[in-house]
Image (cartoon, rainbow over all chains, first blue to last red; front, side, top):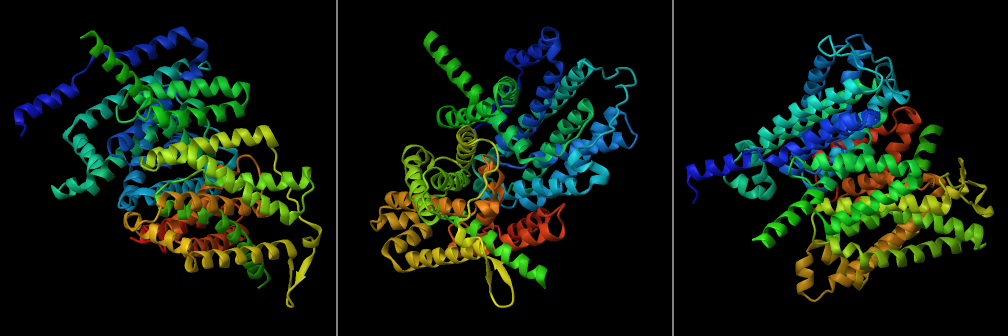
Length: 328
Length: 286
């Protein structure tokens, strides 16, 4: 048996910041100064990092496989977009509202579907996103339907920082929001609540047996994850001033799943490796030809699943472990 | 009345294609618990094979369909032996990602070979007419499609219910460990089932070009529909796949007929309702 004190020490140790954790943030700030012409792409990458981070919370920590996480991304994007198109251009309140609406949608849908498992759960997440896409397509009056939502005009952030043409403000805005969301996510996964989620992922029967309110915990993290995905969607709507139906598409749900698999799930920082890797590759390969991109990403998926199921971060960890062993 | 008849007829033709393609996916999922999201790629391959054989090699329609079955079945065995079997023991997530990877690659390969545009279906001359059923005329091709599919379904039912291999498959779906322990070679059985299911998908893809169209994105575009048939019908249940295919086919056709802008809406609502009510599907085992 582990004593209370030891357990506390274990949690504190896991929670402790390591120097390596500053690397992605330094890289993100450095990228701002080093690649000034890529800031628009950079903002998209940061949004993808946040979206993937939200998926990591449910996939990596609670073991929920979703093929429809774009549902919440899309809800956030349309909430922020419609709010602005209707004349309310203040960005921060748009983000907050997007998080609330997406979170509520996550809570309600999660309550209904998280009683199921396996293929059924997969199908329900997928169908929920597809259903929303049909609704968005049909409600042209609000969403612009197939043509997309136009007429989004954002006010300056805090009334000071205007969104510029080169995407500088957008990049820093996304980075700041991502940082805040990351701190929240990190606190969640290292909390007792986060630990109990891992317990559910590893052995759900046992968690039932010890009397943990499994369903409520799953629904809670699902709603939190949905809110975070909603913020990512809202950022996209605000920085590009456009929302298209693709925010709700199956492809987007697939993209974010691939990103987190590439980077490595269940470790928060996987999103920071997967998203730039995926999007820079996509940017470069799709320029050559879309077939190269599709073949490449398909092949990468197969290879990763076969030989590196824990993603790039997993590979790095293995390398690190070997290095330490050798030097001992 | 005319509308209802058209919807019923077109919905049935559509349902038959959905069934032929999805039934293999359902049985492999029931048998090995393998989530094969790339199953639609085999249907796509069947479509391209049949069209190419007819157009380039001048092989008659029926021959091309049969060759599509054989060709796809053989190719699927190669995939099963070399790649798929590495994933039987792995988790659902790995299976999903692996097969989505295959879907992406299939899109790229088919675009390079056959080009990105929609393929024009080839309908043989003897099926270009209308069939007069007394009260109404129906397009001969779709009538033929429905009849052939029904014949295949009867053959499938007979094979599963009345032959030894069929009994072994049913036993393995019900309880794989028990089947293994009484000496059934489940491994070999699975290869046979996989080939048969993929071959049927090949036929469905070949016959269904006129209904579903055919582009390199086929496997991705129709993936959701195939998965819905499997999930709503219940894993491993042929009867379930049939009922689900008819249900989905007719509802989707009716939805698109009456509400062209949001036709698939009803499809997803019905699926969600069915799965919340019966998570194991209509005919699945809890």
